[in-house]
Image: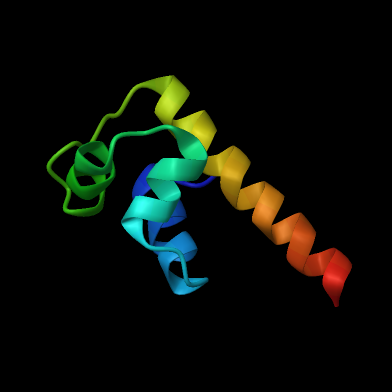
Length: 66
């Protein structure tokens, strides 16, 4: 499981905006921004799970389309 900041950075690298990450994970964009900018170093477990679940789903989709 990735750290929340690393998961967000990877999703952005894959082409997702903070707004799109928010839309898919139901995490407020303000929380995503705070995690990304190290202003929220210890987010709730549900937030960590949502980010990692979304990242895993995207990675599975990319693996299947190769």
